[in-house]
Length: 74
Image (cartoon, rainbow, N blue to C red; front, side, top):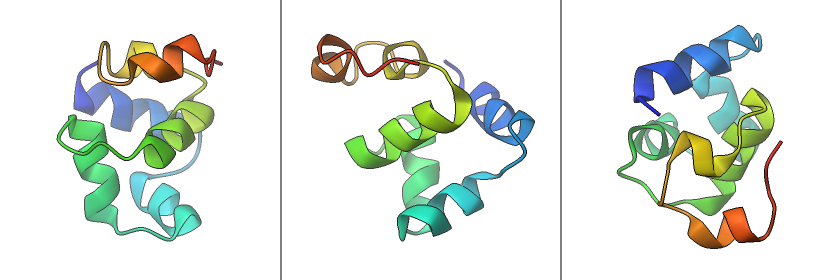
């Protein structure tokens, strides 16, 4: 999914990528890198999936194949 669509989905849930970062105790840059597909933090990816209600496999197709197998989809 395009990074701007991911950010829009986060905002549509009444929060921001910065709020996601604060909640996880990571930098905004870390969250931005995961959103853009440059970072590989599973914890951040899972949280974004939880916030948006969109499966990790849909947000980043092929990036986290073991998470899709584990069934972490909302």
